[in-house]
Image (tube, rainbow, N blue to C red; front, side, top):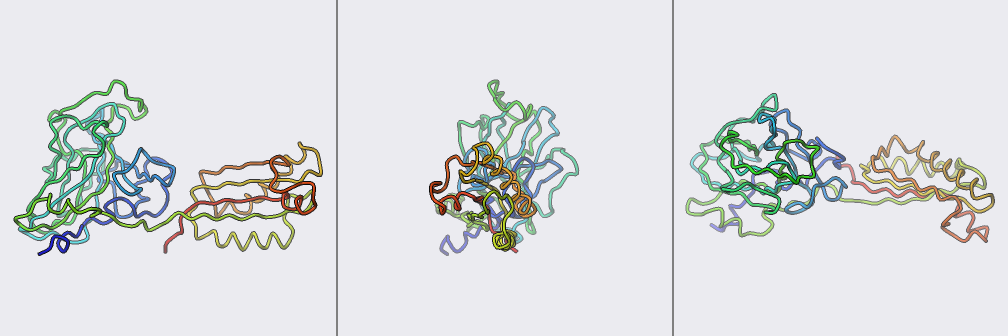
Length: 343
């Protein structure tokens, strides 16, 4: 049977490409689809196109991060997902994940994937000491200089396995550890922080190995459910006014309704004035105009990455020596980047 018929990845969202919303900070794994924390720990979700990242992913744009060792040995994090189908008894599978060490105080050598019938969850930050089917075989600590490492192994399913959990399943004294005295990430404390990407569980024939299916390119490729979009609009004010006239206000409200379908991650406001008054007064007028626009749009934009540029009469959009140019400069331009919300 051709390999490409068997090589169906049972891990949903294997490269963390599918997501609900842009991550903006720590502890936001819930913004990627399907994945969950294996205890009360708080893994991270990173995206290179959301201005919250940690280096580069193994592929695509999304990846995850979690603490796998710490000064308190019971302060570990796990990450898990439910497979798209139940594993069959006696059938051979190849399990794979990619791991990379981030800047940390300490590094370890054994990171694994546990495949289980029931969902693994501990109602605390406690470790899960079990025997993972997939385990890194490195005799030295996994350090940042190694880059992204692929961990894989073949295993025979006992039957009815439906969940995978990735993390540190090894007792502390069984690890080969390395201390990084030059770590710049002191805020994380005595932690080992690792990044995770491109996870797979693939059925293979009894005579095959992981190498047979891993030769295929992009076997975990999956398109993001959300694509970056940009919306630009400009609203014009009457002379010496910081509130829109009826026609422009109506146009702003109609545009506001359309913005409800966008999850905004970057917002730029550029407010201007003509040169009919003093420089200081025109700057004040541009501030009042940008404040006015934001007061109307704030409940639909809600962006943590807001940048406001109040230019006054400086760096005008058009020539202030003409009436037409002055009209164009009495304006607020809005530039929005985000993702279309999916129902």
